[in-house]
Amino acid sequence: MARQVFGFLNSGAVISRTTLPGGNIGVYEIEVTEGCEATEHVLANLRLPAQCLIAALLRGDFVRVPGGDDRLQPGDSVIALIEDSAVEDMLHFFRFANR
Image 1: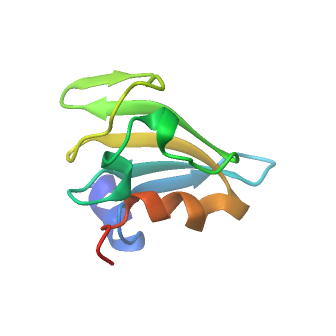
Image 2: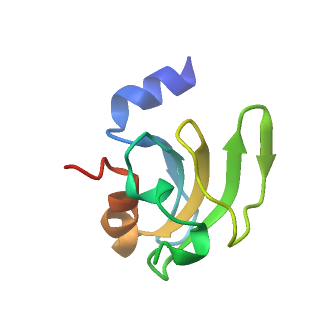
Image 3: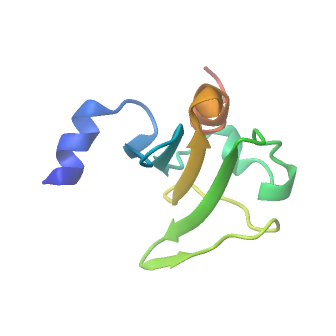
C-alpha cells in the first residue's frame, strides 16, 4: 500500500524518495524503463553526475551492489543516493530517450 501511495506522490521513473537526516542527500528508488538512456551503456560509461551514487540494483528477486561493468535493463530498479543539486541531471538518464 505504501508503494502505491508513493507512486501518486512521485512522477516519472521515481518510485520513492526520502531525505537523509541532516543533509541535502536523497535516497531514490528509480525504475529503469524501456528506451531510457540509462540502458544504453554500462554504468561506467553513463557519465552520471558526480553527486550521485547507484548503491543497489534490484533485478527480479535479487538485490546487489552494481559494478561499473553492469548494464541496467528495463524492469530493473536502482537505489540511488543523489545530492539535491543533481537530481534533475540524474533523472534525465531514466526518462525516455525520445522525449
